[in-house]
Image 1 (cartoon, rainbow, N blue to C red):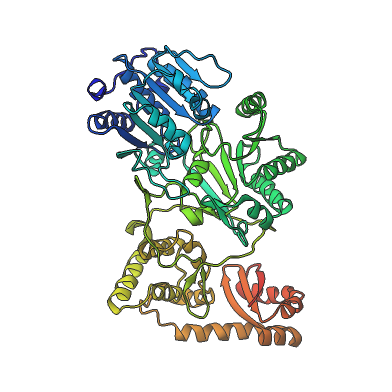
Image 2 (cartoon, rainbow, N blue to C red):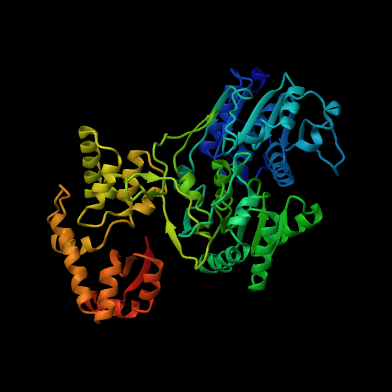
Length: 580
């Protein structure tokens, strides 16, 4: 077979739409794959969601059938089957046979597409195939797929996926002998093949307290218990109104029950919404999808249905209302919104579950292998600092969403040109830490002592060099204590790279005492004896109280303290009280 399909790619369908013609990166990928079959029987092809995997394998099939060879495409969802049929027929100009319940099979056609569930029951009726394409091939280690591939021992195998990794950590070396990776998500965005995006995350992510894992991902029933639907649904509706109001969104939910309830909350708020799941009947599913694509439905809530296979270029964004431990699932969910469309400036991703902190950003560079994705092993995986030891620890925080506050988080260009002086400062810290044998925590402890506030990019660059979690920087940037910034206003041009701030801390204590002296005696004594200025960041002040009782007493004193701070800083101040 390999001798029959090698060579560069051609096109049988002369009337084929330009939409389905190969772009340069796709042509290169297709040719690499065809050439690879001269050496290997089985190949896995990786290309990010929206990069055109179906177009690529359709052109490979087109080249194959020119020699009268038979091809089979295996998919696990009806949406994948319908999308593949349309593109394959347009590119090859050949009718496709469908092996699926409800369709009359025609095994004489050169190209067949089959659902996994139907094909395993009809293997004895199938002809021998020369090429088998497995769509969403990260599922290929499942028993049903293996039985299909074992039935055709002489066929070439092409697995296509955006994410060659599995939840259980199982690799693909027993199924594929070579991995061919395409361009990255970032490259596709830069060349205009995928949409730029804005990523918003809740400061109070869905709770994982008491949540166990099952099959490599978080157990849905545990996630439900930890996150009552009432508050969660309200947060989802609010985040949609704040960032995507009137636009088309797909919501990914932790369970069918939650998806139904969330869709109901949207409808109660006057937003056209619907729910779908794997048990929805085919006619209802098709009708709902048609109404969603036409804009009659604004919000489509689902559970376990559209992680893969949803191809709606006009989709404005996604809402992640479920935590996932799966990098593959995370990338597939966010990738649904990255397809380009006319009038679409940016895709929107709203993350209520802290998924980006676990997996990084969609456009992060990843080194895919047949064993999954290569990651830098981290000795510290925590996002919270232990106040006694200074270590970054992994902790469970009970943060059932209430009073939703979203912040935009971005993947940034961590280059010398972007970081400026901070690039040099971070490099110097790392060099000193390495030379003197300090622990990695020494670096960020020193950066916290900077007399001017280090930008988020500086923390991201430091975390990247220390091998910390991608979400670590978001937490560290807020730990810098702003009273230092008061000193920095006077010394901004006289930066002391020794980070010796004993004089500055003395100034901070003096400043806090001066503010307290402006308060009435009762208020002054309360904060002086039982409170400590934790941080000031622009117009936001955090004060740590010694007990919940003292905090309750201090709540009524906030207006007086805010007035004193506001008069001193000439702006309206917001005060937060926290407890040890």
